[in-house]
Image (cartoon, helix red, strand yellow):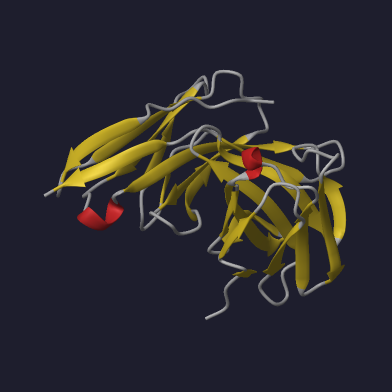
Length: 114
Length: 113
């Protein structure tokens, strides 16, 4: 069945390195969300795309984070340079504009920055 | 933005009803209440949502108080597979005509055999 895929599933990197996380939304979905989850903060919305256009990235630290959708089948979240406090699980979710109650989440990328 | 508060953890006996409370005292009139749950190491899963009327589906029931300042998610017959973190969420409209979901810190429900 259709599902959101994310790569990599796990990433360990050193502080200062660039990290790129990828998400493939469900084919035909036109909304994409990036979330970050930590034990302390729970789930936080980082960015929201509709029809590939970024509509809300107020939850994202602008100085080091960037989110893009180069095409309808790929969303990327980049951190440069990474810091230990970025260690978290990053979830991507996709959905349809006309069915806003439904967000389909990917399995997440567990990022560890040492 | 509206915020939600939930108890950090709850236990429930298998087969009994699990009642998970949520406070959202600053919710606005047009903001929906959503519930998601997250089973260990998986992405969140949609459960139910509502505005002001009580709602029921095959997974759960949602009871919203008349003043909309709080709600309760009810799992009528909890099973061991319902052990998860349950998030009460407020969906807010943005000035750009879209929605964003504000997650609380969740309630860790443990269903006991």
